[in-house]
Length: 373
Ligand SMILES: Cc1ncc(COP(=O)(O)O)c(C=O)c1O
Image (cartoon, rainbow, N blue to C red; front, side, top):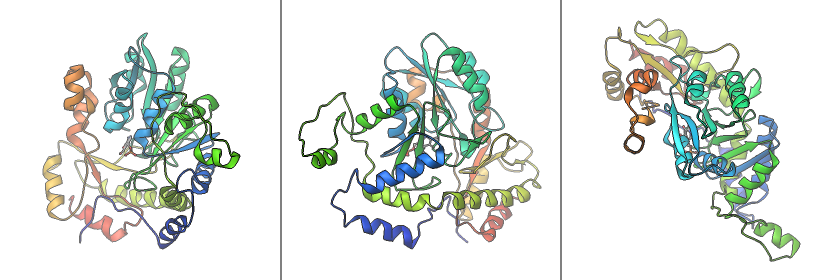
């Protein structure tokens, strides 16, 4: 048996929906994107949803639209993908890493408090693996200190905190449609927000800073437009929007399937000494974008030895994450000492993400677990 770390769930219907768009004249900024954005707003409960080329774009536009730049600081968890911190770096601001909690792997509110200075402008929270951060505490800190919260929801399409959707609690929410994610468009992303000023700015910045789009100019028969700011081409085209819209219809089913797979894993893995199953909190759901276990000291192999064993048995795995403060670019630039992040430093040697994808069968789950014991 061969079990990849992930495989996207693409249906014939998805294919048909992509092909239909090839008959359209406007292959970007057309009807599919509008529909996809509207459906996204309804699910998240945000006033606006703006399709972009990736979550990296979504994060960059979020930081930029807040006017954050040189001299400013943004707090980011160290236990995340580079894109979260890169968004801060692109804007010329300083990335201030914070440690995470040992159990949820989410940014620690206490650590946020410790890292705030006069220069802090925002906090980027990452809802690790599909389980929300402790948003009550983080929102309360941000209100007291006048900070903005950007939610990195790359793992969290459908995740909730006290029944509030991830992507509806910060000034923006940033979603990814990379092939491993809850839904995919190949590459793609979405920004959600209920702030009309920020949303307008993001729309303008994602299309070269233009104030009137070509399709609107055509409709009105007016050629004139202005470039209001230094923008980008961060658009999500119609072909990918059609795939996103098609996949979006299955979000609830996808998450139901992921939760069921995680339950099967949990029931089998909790019997194995030396392995810890993912911790869950009662005030939030977990949609298991990642199924991350911890390899403890009393397990008979090290984490890396286990990865090799699984690899030899044709089982794909991943380590999410090796902390960013130890990555060359950030270490060279900021000279972070390893001791500043005790939890992330322990987790980096313990964490292992097992295969999880919506079409994974019970037989496949059992096969993976059989190679763990
Ligand atoms: C936490 C997190 N943030 C941001 C991203 C970037 O997403 P994208 O590849 O859509 O730019 C990822 C991608 O893996 C991620 O895991």
